[in-house]
Length: 424
Image (cartoon, rainbow, N blue to C red; front, side):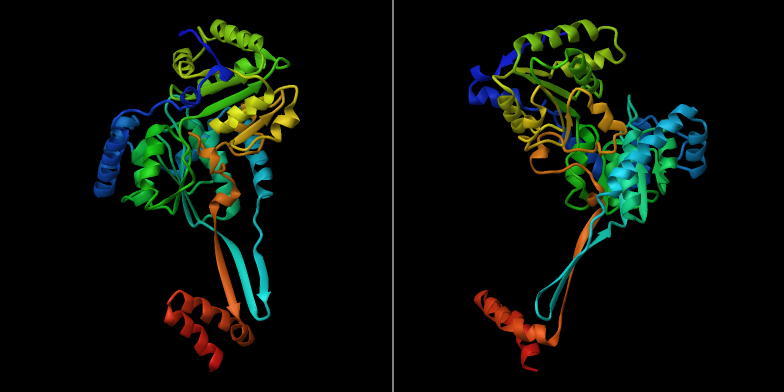
């Protein structure tokens, strides 16, 4: 494993600081390749979708793209009871938290006779992308299908590479409407434009690798997406009071997500940094997925700060998907958080709890998008429609204002639309 270095933040120039917090570069020509896949699926539909699913997702040649409801049910029946029970607990906690997010309509009269309303309406057809590959993330089914159900979306379409039994079982438990065994950029194209099998959806949700993220970005002009949610990342803030063993597993649990994941430890204690690095170097060899972890750690950053205040400044610059605060000043540090997807506070709050079953959502903005985007919530499955109704008195009172403003914009017909109602 490549030797891990410590970077001293105070000694770095602004340019070196920026470079240190830069995300790993995406694969070359990714944009062009994804554009080609999207074009092929958009033009040829199921024919190309099936071809890509066989070549890239490992779909067997005689298998169908759509997984039947009976097959989903059988996957659930075949699950060991302890996994079934754990899934039920996770689903219940996620339901509990997301039900509290139900939006309320806004209704008022801004002046006599002028009534305004804003109403949340569930998005009709949603597409849920569930990552597969070496670690089928069936927990993402709960994170997306549960709020979609609570919101009242009429059609829930799920895509995931291959036929992972646990993912299929989770889909059965969450009662998705259709399940398609296809992943990657080709799945995003199918959801965005529709094929003979896959219905076109109104909004696409879900995390994925760099191919999926690029595909979501490219189709966003035609179909809404939740956010840029690509390769996963974590930043841990620690100090001399932190427990090295906890930090070790927080970092490694993120690193095992994939070779394109990134882990960052920002700590005000050099001794603590050295302790954690030593534990990593002694622990990684021989771990399951150790090759993947080593590749991820090659992109890791271990930063020595002057204080917890400087640590949170660094974190806000990076804008991590996951932020873990494990210091002797957790409350103070928490109150300084500006940019983060989801925050885990204190020694007993590993990222795993949010990934699976605490109740919060794990579909979060990555790549610095947390500066402007929120993670998926119940609100993500609604659009807001505004209504207004004016009485005869209302238009009579408001019309002079409308006429003046419309004339100031040189829009004569706008002014007349209001005036004609005032004078008749």
